[in-house]
Amino acid sequence: MRIAIDTNILAYAEGIGDSTRRDASLSILERLPAEDVILPAQVMGELFRVLTGKGGCSPDIARSRVLQWTDSFEVANSTWSAFQSGFDLTVDHNLQIWDALILSIAAESRCRILLSEDMQDGFTCRGVTVVNPYRTPVNPLLLPLM
Image (cartoon, rainbow, N blue to C red; front, top):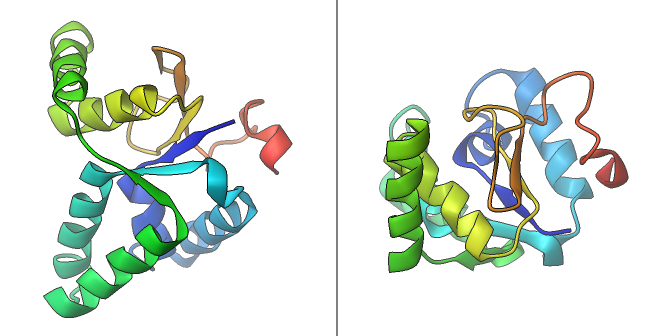
């Protein structure tokens, strides 16, 4: 099962936020089969922004941290068709365009799950279900990965 990761999961893993979310994020990411994980390119740009903003990292340190994630997981680029789908999600479901783009990239990459705390847990589009990995009880889609 292919899984896309949203920015907040990686930001927490980088120590942005509380230690409980950091530890949970690291645990989740360590258990996922690396060959099944997709990082939308949009997420990497957002992570860079978070690290240089809230994280207080210099751009060179932020770049290094982002590249470490891309060494571990496949990056899926934004495509025009993903943008078009993202526009539709924004119009039809009132999603923010950048969240909609991430969801669209997950669909194009044949993901079954998008791990995200920011989007509506359980929202499904084009076969991709948004799953909040911090929510209890654990979403049944995550059980085989736990």
